[in-house]
Length: 410
Image 1 (spheres, rainbow, N blue to C red):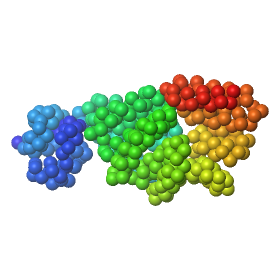
Image 2 (cartoon, helix red, strand yellow; image 1 turned 90 degrees about the vertical axis):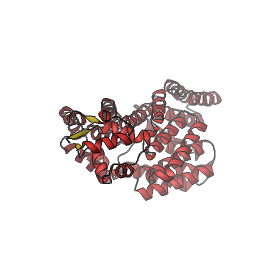
Image 3 (cartoon, rainbow, N blue to C red; image 1 turned 180 degrees about the horizontal axis):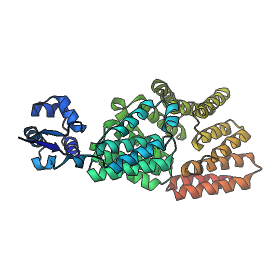
Image 4 (tube, rainbow, N blue to C red; image 1 turned 135 degrees about the vertical axis):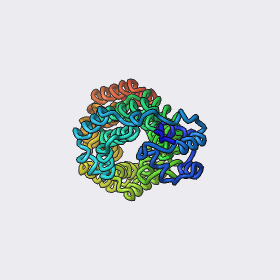
């Protein structure tokens, strides 16, 4: 009997929906598990009709549903492949991924690009990985291009996993741009596709959603969501995932005034960053511990931690307003207002494209100038800007907080 071409995208979806494992399918059909894996990877394009019939039965489908008339339906078009190669070759992934030790990602992406007859779902995964690599480097416009490409491919081939991963990247990009409502909506869409996401990715959805809820001032929801991420990552995350989650928890605890919990979470984050060689996490850990030390009255430790954190970020060529916000607030707590002003003003240079960071810096700068006493007019202006931005990005809780601060200094 003739061989047939499998509809890999449908099969992947059905396996997820029915929670079927590769080893079980292999056992039921009477083939090696490696064979099933090669089917799903698109490495074996045609299979015996009797195996396809057995597979359809286990997937609770008709045979016609899981086969295609030609294997061309599985493949990315030549134009898709050409566009992927163009996007990769025009980027600076080596320069950006190298300093944060993501050489394995770079290698995987390049290898995926040069595979002949690349399956469409592989190209979708490639775009998704590129989107993540870019937004982690603050290259938001490029990340948006890759995420949208992945989403379009996922829809074209009806691959729910590709769609879910692309939606997560789109949510992260909306968050970076200060498009809060759109970001939260996308995260919620990810959760609706939960069964198509690996557990580790689901943890990232919770962690990122928890982060944006904290950013807009909903501390309770942010904490609860971040704790869900922590629970997932305990069994399914990497040390890098756990480091990011602990850092986010430290931010929330710190704002809640729970300095002891914040310190414990920040120390855990730094330890996990060291374990994972996660350099961004190492840098941030020092900044958070710097503010914590300032709140505990440990002046020298606070200054050393801030200095170390900023220097480490500089070594990675990472300059973000969020980092200078920590530095400025730490020096404000220490009572060194001129140095605080200098750090916050520096942070403004890097925050024009990131509204949430910008609003937070204006808030801190308004507080610092108010406490200086001689610059109250400037202080009120900065606080007004902060309120306006927080309102525009859909963060009414933060806006009300700044209004209270402004009133207290007027």
